[in-house]
Image 1 (spheres, rainbow, N blue to C red):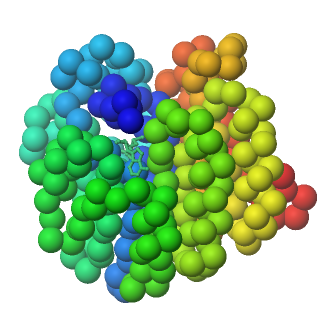
Image 2: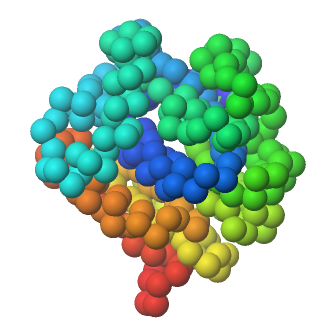
Length: 285
Ligand SMILES: C[S@@+](CC[C@H](N)C(=O)[O-])C[C@H]1O[C@@H](n2cnc3c(N)ncnc32)[C@H](O)[C@@H]1O
């Protein structure tokens, strides 16, 4: 396990994933009843974009930093405001170059009654997460995130989100991701699940989409953003999200906000956005 999210924190893929996470949490928070978030691959929770790792790749400069400075069309700005305001608040508290990982962002956008389970297998990352996400609402486990899907679903609250965001450094991750989505849905059919995947090897991505569609989960949304031309199989050209049981507004929200930010974040100044149903709407795939 060599992956360290600090090299990639705040990049275009993180921005897309965290923007979707924020929209989903806002939707969950519309009802007073508590919800739970299971974040299976949580990371360190907080990243210093001025630190050596982030500076080595410079990825955040073309991601969150560009977005925070941008003058966006009003509808996209309104949809992104809760996420970007959470980043600004965190910077005011912790320092001007800090960026939240999914656990800290989830805590920031939730209420006192909500609960969180964060899994992180890497010892050093987990120790950082314990400091960064120290909050009475959260439990932090050094459990395999895929096992956690089997062990901790359904949550007592019977509503919430499973976020599955693996590092894709070992072969077989697409198959494990498909299995985890199936398992999460079997155990927690009314819950939402969001899985992140890299767009790199297009054949593998095609097969993954087909395998997910074959699970016949009732509503499955695909959100994809290419931030570079697809050139070689070993270069990341974009990133994708599968969302099971998304809020009914998520499709339009993500289309609006990604279409506005794609030209800013894409290396070719254009970017391509695809938001469509894999399952759930007639004629989708
Ligand atoms: C892509 S990063 C997570 C980023 C985080 N979700 C965010 O958005 O800020 C993936 C993390 O999963 C951890 N990890 C790898 N394999 C794991 C496993 N089987 N179970 C739990 N954590 C794992 C890695 O150490 C790494 O910190």
